[in-house]
Picture (cartoon, rainbow over the protein chains, first blue to last red):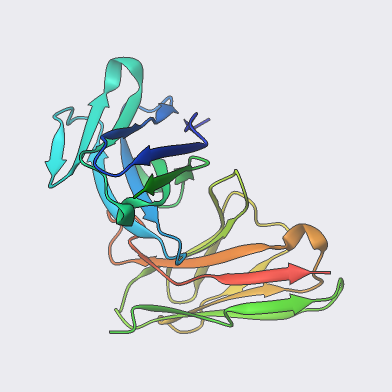
Length: 117
Length: 113
């Protein structure tokens, strides 16, 4: 069975600090996808990134970066120089590829990030 | 650009009452999903649809029914509401088979007394 663990329930940092959100996953599939979503206080869900299991290159998008380590089944998310607007709940998610792709998404419980001014 | 629209945004029901949540998308997406979000549990898939006239069960389908009579609409029904169904419900859509749920509605906060 697939499972996503986000051990950090809540994190608080001061503005401009770097922060890393941890995501550890379990799957029996050799081909799968990993995702991060952001849910700001307004409640909507924002898709941030998708990575497939064949691509272990780290990805950077502005202040956001993602570290995919297949050996440790982790897909961690780092925000550099955090800002108050980064305050949100962040969800990591996992989906197997193949015919069931898109229908077997498993979300982690989320990490609430508070960035203090 | 409405995207995904959910109605209503809030609702309070008594145990045993029925209601329907409406999700409408104007992007001509094939895939639509209903999730529920509970504290500490992330989002869990209730039902989904891969196209007009098709529906399938997700992780937590019990107590819910869905219909996709028109491509743009995905309805979630509670026939006999129970307090355990108190939650925030999100509808989502995606364009193709290979896309994750990318477009979410604003959510419906449902309380069952």
